[in-house]
Image (cartoon, rainbow, N blue to C red; front, side, top):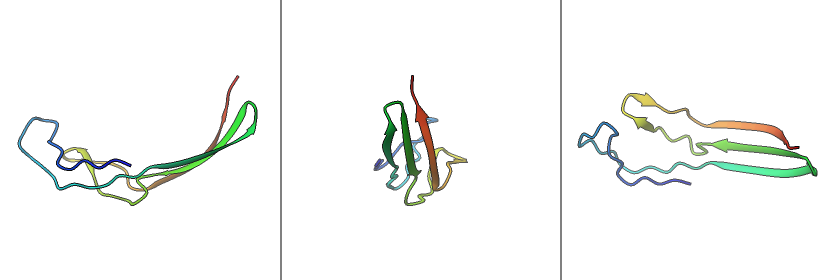
Amino acid sequence: GLYPPQPLDQFGSDVFVSGFGLWNVQLSRPLLPWLTAFAGCDNLLDADWEQKLGTPEAGRRAFVGVRASY
């Protein structure tokens, strides 16, 4: 989880926003020595936030997949 209490706008102005929480979750499970399944959710609480003013970030995003290594 992330909690920025009063981030300053990246353009260097004196614009502050109130704090918010951003929670990301991911679980994984090995299936074979070289294969792992995973599932997760970014922005679990669906917070409205912007890294830069005027560019809203995505809302809640769920995902699943597999990772293979060699």
